[in-house]
Image (cartoon, rainbow, N blue to C red; front, side):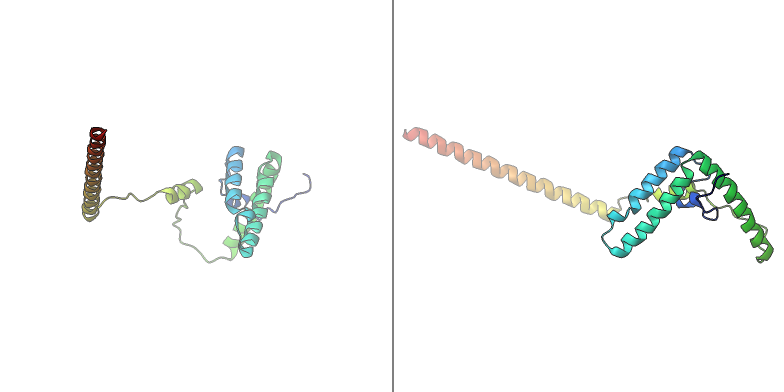
Length: 166
């Protein structure tokens, strides 16, 4: 194994918001989308720029590790060992938990839950005000139409009067 250029204690999959079983295309898509959202040039406030810069560094590091198959395999092996060590330490020194474990939703389930938009319905008062607005619009349109017809008739009469004088 060559010298590592990654920290196995950091969860690069969580940084890129992908599952460990994600394909290279999914990793690239997620990386580009997250970089678009958190690029430092998008922010004018210096504090936000600094935070976005730190986030961009994390994203770049995660993408550098997960985009190359051999580096990703090394990371998965090392991170798996680090995770096992952390779980052993937690189980050894943590307080006992209940035996019932609740399953955490996957990334795609969390993401789809945030995308759902509430269905908007028109209530009866809104429907009544909408009908009133439409009636006012029609009345205005009819008034304008009548005014145009009157103006055209007056112009025609005036034109006829001029022709009679000539």
